[in-house]
Amino acid sequence: MIAGTTLELSLCHACQTRYLPCDGPCPKCGSSDCAEYFTSAVGRVLAATELHYPASGWHAPHRLALIELADSVRVLVILDGALPAPGTLVEVRHDKDVYRAKSEPAR
Amino acid sequence: MSVHISSVGMGRFGKRPEGLIDLAAEAASLALEGVGRKPIDLLVAGSMFAQGPQGREALLPRLAGRLGLESAAGFRVDSSSGTGGMAFHNAVLALETGRFDRALVVAAEKMTDRSTAEITKDLAASLHMSEVAAGATMPGLAAIVTQRYLQRYSLTTAVCDLATVHARSMAVANPNAHFQKAVTAEDVAASRPVALPLRLLHCSAISDGATALVVEKGTGPATVLGLGQGFDALRLVDREELTTFAATRLAARRAYEAAHLTRKELNVVEVHDAFSPFSLIHIEDLGICGPGESPHWFEKGWVGRDGRLPVNPSGGVIGRGHPVAASGLAEIGEVALQLRGEAGRHAIATRPKIGLAHAMSGIASHNFVTILGSKTA
Image 1: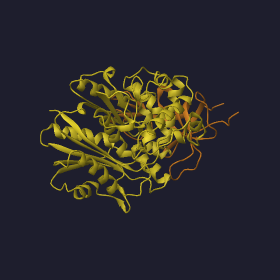
Image 2 (image 1 turned 135 degrees about the vertical axis):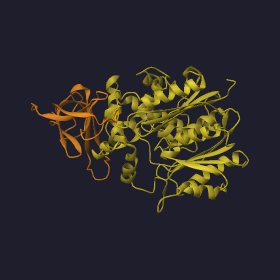
Image 3 (image 1 turned 90 degrees about the vertical axis):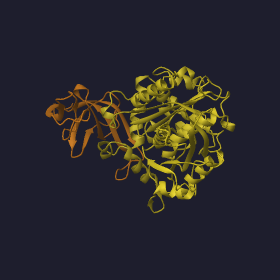
Image 4 (image 1 turned 180 degrees about the vertical axis):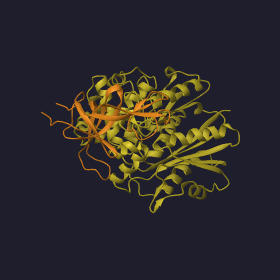
């Protein structure tokens, strides 16, 4: 079961784009007229991959997933755990400069 | 004002002992010999890394000096793997101003003298910083795109394997291609994982190589009929759809409009298959077939040398090899060779009159479409 935690996002007042991370201007129109808001940290895995030749500084296998949060906001996360099937629900958390999600071991 | 490609120069792609400048000069000399060393008044050079033994090379002045082109004007471009396309498009734009008569366009890359880890890191420069911060690589993001495509159309990786088999079978006829040996679907499926679902043989190789074209005022079999560029959001998360590349669709629409042509008039196509499943997406985005229909084109052999519309008769990026900046220009050069009847063993079954070349930067963040052919077609 996934806990009901939240994640901080931004809403651009100029073009209504919702995005993260929430520490910069709108990626769509460049406006800085943005407000922070909170949404559920639970998202759905759209796709996930396992990198066997990661970039320098990372260890293989390095797992990444594209997650869709509420309001169709998407985020690329580092996966801790097994490679989840598309559609799996995971909880996303902000960790310094990146986002992470923990997936359940494959059954 | 009409502009046409009057000569194509290309050395062998692959692991080469020469450095960047020698590779570029080899291709340039071949192109210049093709026009009897007529005067050049514009030199356009492109390289993503411009990597020499001691670091970054001053490619443009070194090449001008090496080729005796000190009196020419010049500029250098960089759009990662789309560099060759960008170099060609900007050379054409410069010629169309009427200020220049004949341009030499050169794109070159030296890659095999560095480790895979170093190249992987450098190639990630074409990605968004937030993606790089998460440890994303080009194959990693391409894998996510591929997985979305396969899911959307309920496909298996067998279609990706087939796209690789096609590319490698085409490359066998191209003496300049990195890979001279065909592979089977079983070979592809058994190759080691890179970023699942992508395996080694779904991914383009690290290659050295260069391409050079002479482009000049006038008309010929490879006259520039239409150019188009398109951008898309750099971050994948900012794109609404991942099973199609907006940058290709936009570039193609502009090129077709400029050429006053539709895809039905194309006789040959080169697409930028940095990852073999991308060739499936590209031919859909170019309007050659509908969304999700391209696997059928590969299964039926319609993209073969004697098929309905030959795709990547050079072997494409997968078969020809991928010296990143040179690839976009090699795609244009291949179409020009086909149109000019100079493709030799890799010529398609019927000499074409109209051809299209597609070049891609990064994960389709800035794409280029070039339509070449004869005005009388």
